[in-house]
Length: 407
Image 1 (cartoon, helix red, strand yellow):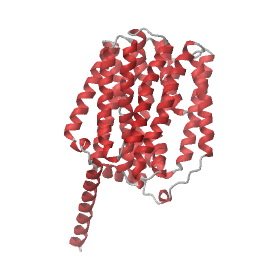
Image 2 (tube, helix red, strand yellow):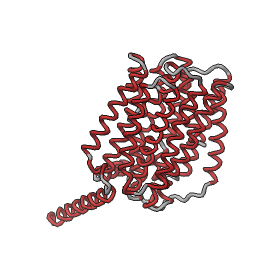
Image 3 (cartoon, rainbow, N blue to C red):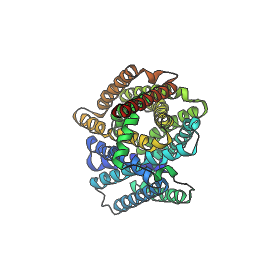
Image 4 (cartoon, one colour):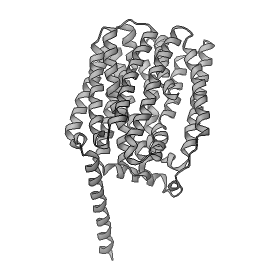
């Protein structure tokens, strides 16, 4: 349900912002504000270890329902202004920032370590299924009822999700009752991640994709309107096809992926997604664009599914919330790309802006794969675990020798 609304909101807010401002840059700013709160992901990870994750998730759904209700009222009253959309995007983004340290960490708590990849893949499959529905419904509403229809649907879906969340049985891990000070937790988390080449590499690719890949999403509806010359409904269909590709990709991963495949799926999925973006920027035919975006969705699912699966699999249970918080934080650096692509789109044109940013992203991902070879290894997860255990043993030996020397 929330997956439907998140994809629907992005389409409705983007097209409504374009209608109000006629500025690709200001459209990209709404995306910038949506992802900006992710910068506080590490802090949210620490918070998620101290509070009941079920309550945090329910509180977030209540905020999303309230924002949707406010935007619906303003649209119906014909009082909607650009700054309302900007503020609404930021508040929705603040809830999205809790997604990794709260909901996805909860998934890691209820499944065995060896099944983390499948669990995240199934969750991604569900999200992708709703991503097929969300943009299509948004496009239909924009062409018939208007933007208020999408926002009113949000009130309903977020409210239903809130009821489901409150009825869910969830017990807070007992380890959360014995925690160090927040500052100490943050330092411990950073040190823990630094010992893992797989985690460092995963975070690096996460940053690249969010800065140079996902930034294209703010310009996608603009290209569809100005270059492909299609209606709001067909723009919704276009984004739904991307969701269909993501659904197929996530389903295949859920069935076939094993821990030894995680990093390769992650890297090749990222490459496929960026190549699709580059080709999309040059397409002038709507039906060809649908095929391109379908394969882009497959690549996106490989990236998005394995991003969480790798980090949860590699982290100890005590560190998962902080590790997932770091993922959110690196996603939060992505809005820099929204500013860049928005400025390029205003200075040149949206298609060229997508081509340039996608090309830089593809080059930097390939460089990351060369510089961090463990990401290409079929034994990446096992090698990473062995390296971290060896580093931890060295640290313990160093501490012990220090103590004996001082005695």
